[in-house]
Image 1 (cartoon, rainbow, N blue to C red):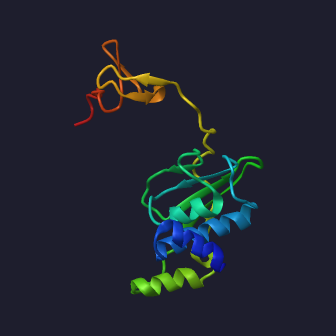
Image 2: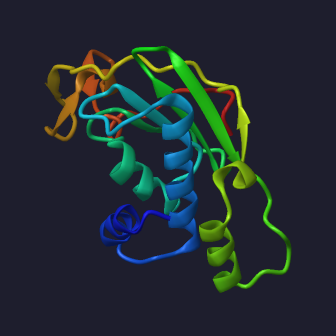
Length: 175
């Protein structure tokens, strides 16, 4: 591992762990496969299928963040990450291979640190299409609580504009 990059990831995350090593390896592997560099805006997009430690390394190394709109979550609980490069249209999905069974936490950490990304991840085609760039929406005052919400999260109910918290959804098939 490149010590300085790793230390920056650890400082951001707060501690050193196997999960962070997974994201670290995934980010560097995606960068090498797609020619990615740190994303100042939304040139690089990551869709993570988990919200575990590794996502922090992806933020640090590739500049993907929720606030910029280029870090998105498609929660499947898998250690899988789809990376997209908007300009070229190229993409890759990296899926963590199973590690050997019976490892301690320390052995797992060493395993993720010591193995090459090619050994750790299966390279697949992405399953989700590249999301559109982030949009900026108007702010709307909720007629229920009076708080401001983005217009794409406002619902109409009996002529009232309601936020997600105040809206009482209607679905007769949901039990």
